[in-house]
Image 1 (cartoon, rainbow, N blue to C red):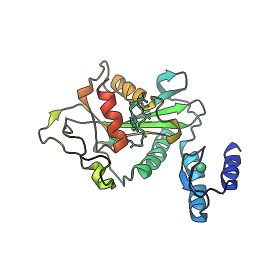
Image 2: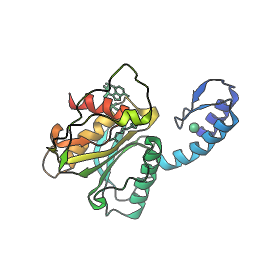
Image 3: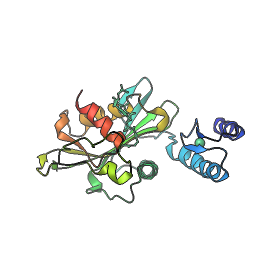
Image 4: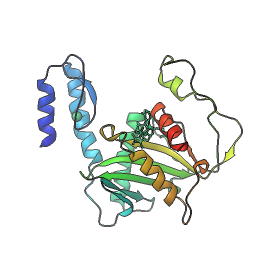
Length: 223
Ligand code: ACO
Ligand code: ZN
């Protein structure tokens, strides 16, 4: 009911500029009927996708004042796998990834950050890797023409370095960003990826990072 109210309030303010929905985080032009329709469609699908009802057998690997991290493994019950698939679909949509098939689906580890409001507000998907290529340089020019293709074209070394764990996706719900959720997901991953050891920073690698992903990774790896 809280979300419906929000929709009416948003639709009532006839904005000409962009608005951000306070429940689903989508940015849209409230005065444009096409945008409004797209928002309504996204709104319910998204909130349904991140809804977390709680599972009988959940693997809680970390607990915090504002939520907890649950680990899902490939052979977990189908309700857990289905939730992971739903969340991954939302994430891939936002990242513009299409049908990226994991290299070893039976070795994938998915970490979900569950908020106190029983929502999946963070997701990290990791897989074992053997090597990675270091990113060499920063993109050139201040705010260079920012097409998506440009952003992904970081220069990488062609010398492979040994690595253990690849982060294929990391995502935090737009309205929960900059609350150290991504940082806590990576810390938990390092602690849980291999039994009995805490992975070193240079044993993990971020695959194909977005601009946000690179800003986060740079900061994380230097602290
Ligand atoms: N701009 C600048 N610095 C940033 C940003 C940013 N957008 N995001 C994180 N940082 C840095 C900050 O220094 C931050 O610390 P501070 O807030 O104290 O300054 C530090 O990283 C830790 O950030 P967190 O709060 O832990 O990061 P957050 O929970 O906001 O999640 C994430 C970061 C996952 C990149 C989020 O912005 C997101 O989901 N973005 C959209 C999806 C995306 O692009 N994901 C990465 C894809 S790449 C991949 O999956 C391999
Ligand atoms: Zn919305």
